[in-house]
Each structure stands twice: as C-alpha cells, then as structure tokens.
Image (cartoon, rainbow, N blue to C red; front, side):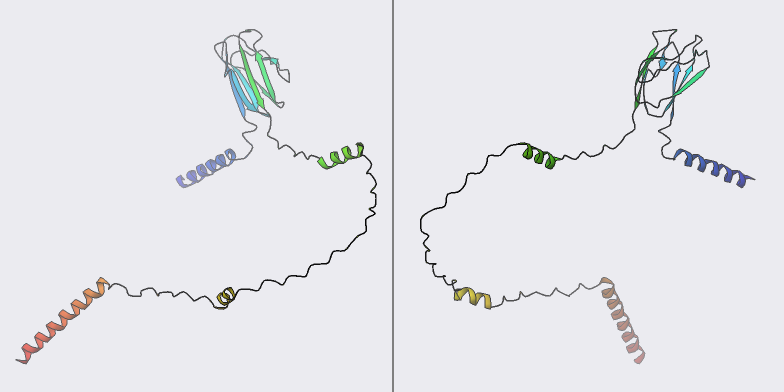
Length: 218
C-alpha cells in the first residue's frame, strides 16, 4: 500500500511539474488586485497582453472598477465584501481606473504589447537615382572639330632587353638550402626506483646464498 501511495504521489508531482513547465503559460497568467483599506493593491501593475486581472473586495464597503483613461472602457459591477470580478486585457495600453463610490481610490494598469519582429525596410536607391536622372536635363555635348595637322608616326623605340640576372643571385638560387640538423631527443631515462630496489634485494639474496654455501662446504 505504501509503495502504491508513493507511486501515485510521484505521478502527481510529475504532472504538476509538466503543467508548470508548459511554455506560454505566463502569457495568459492571472493577476490579482485587492480592494482593501479603501485602496487598490497594487496601485500600479504591468501585465502582458492577454492577461487576466481579478479584483477582490476585502472591505465592508462596496467598491467597483471604472476606467478614466485607456484604449478600452471598463466598468465592473458593484462588488460587496468577498466578491470578485475579472477582466482579460487584449488591447495594449495604459489603463487608469478608480472607484465610483470612493473617488480617492485610484490605480493604473499598463498592458504590454507582444514582441514582434519588425520587417526590414529596403531602400530603393537605384530607382530613385534613375528617376532623378530621367527628370533632370543634361546639356548637349559640343561637337568635336577634326584637327588639320598631319599625323607623324614617331619611331618605336627598340625594345630593351630584359635585365640579365646577376650570377650571384642565380648561383644563390641554384644552391639548395642546407637542411637543418635536428638533434634527436635524448632517449635516456632516469632509473626507476623500483628497479634499483629490486637489484639491491637480488644482490643481497645472492650474497646470502654464497655465504650459506661456503659454510656448508666447510
């Protein structure tokens, strides 16, 4: 029974997490305004477009909600103690409102518009330039007068032979660059401490065997 209850509780928690993590749930959230102490709380509220605001009267005196400014006119019924009224704002803008019974009770709600990406504007500079060129008047070009002087051809200068490459530069180019000698990295490695210890132990063992053999021979 305990295992079944735990499984059911885990399923409920997982469902709650899934519902809370659904994207777009904050856009249609519900905001609450309390009518308490002959005042609206909070007196200033900013909500995204599509949000629902609920007013609840917590005073013994009746209150209502009536807009004094804004893109849409709002007027709620008279609310007694414990009663609520809701309104969904679908038009962005700034809404100022008050209570008709108690004109000193004033508040304001700002509804933000949904973020939209502005379309890029392309400047038609080429068409405008062509239009200005067509509309403007250009002066007619003056005719050219042919020259009466005889045309004399100057002798073409002899082509100069390309400068011969200097022997020093050609010799330097012919000799290949000597390869750089690369010194091999030293392959010597320091002796391992474990190998040294093993050698010492082996030497001591051999010495002991020799001593035992000499004593037995005597």
